[in-house]
Length: 193
Image (cartoon, rainbow, N blue to C red; front, top):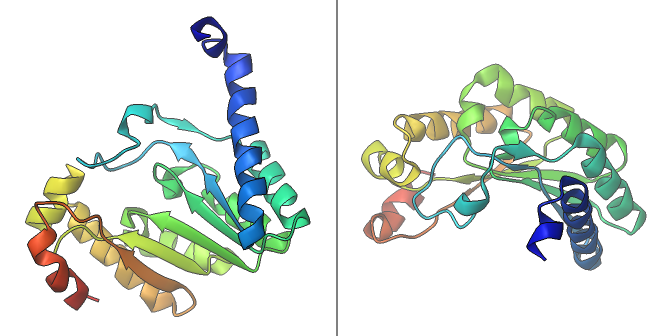
């Protein structure tokens, strides 16, 4: 009922139960997905999560419980997603924790903007980040920035990709949401790799 869902103490339990169910369901594939936040530094026009973006971050303790539960059940790959996981205040701590507890791979699904800061890009990799799936939405700033609704996001994303590749210890994969605005550019986006 709406009255029950409006109670913060019950909402947290519902979120945690969904998360635990998700970790159990995904463990058969040896993976766990941690949706670290309901916040992003982009405002993508096509985002399915936009109605749920309320600026909140999952508590560190909840994520460590999910990691421990998943690892105990055979999970070896931990995916960090959001919103935008790199803006979570404990992003680096989650990577460190997952690797120290035995995760073979820690993978981030990201818009790549925070990696534009070279020192930031080096830190997660030094803590054990093994792969980054970076969303590149256009062949140029005009298209990418239009889709993210953030001026300068193309420059930050492409710089972030370069910084990650420069570490030579983090595999980088690009993802692109095809829209009417960028559909004709898909082969050009691929050529940027």
